[in-house]
Length: 222
Image 1 (cartoon, rainbow, N blue to C red):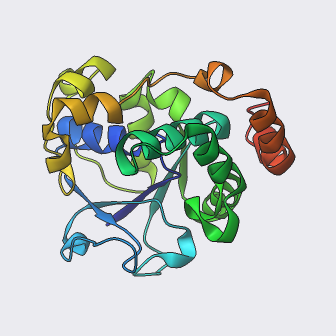
Image 2 (image 1 turned 90 degrees about the vertical axis):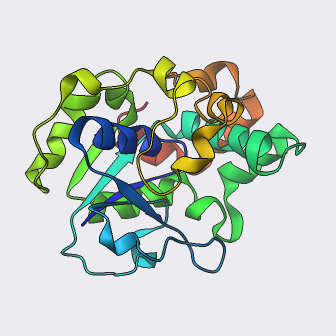
């Protein structure tokens, strides 16, 4: 079993599709059982997606290999806020949700971007960058081989961002929600590096730098 972890909107679903289409590995999901139902058979899958912090995993065995996908926190929180307003709670004001995601009070938004990155950097055996994943998904996926035995890749099956929006992929638990083209177009929204520059207001940028600037610098995003 392999944990596939990320802060929301950081390329986790895209990598799941790559692992399914290119390597033939289906995946499941593990959520907070108090907030969202989890596939009871998730332990039977080779790959399990999660957004939870390492301390919330079940099983908590540190010997289970883990991959973490990190994305520029400014892009991640903007995309997470858009996703919340578009698909989770339609009608909520984007600027309010974005501020909520930045501050992440009382453990909301999985503890906040900085905490999420800090804790998973200590736990994960391989750290991938969203910015590299969308450019060369197979090269990124091949790095997983150092901690988990991947099958031989079928490079001709790697999907493009356009494919994600136009085609329905069966990659395991959670695939059914992608049947609607309307949902896919909103879920795979832009897939762009640096989109925060035209979506994050200056006040929200200030909030973000005050709270997460140290982690941004440590991860090389500033």
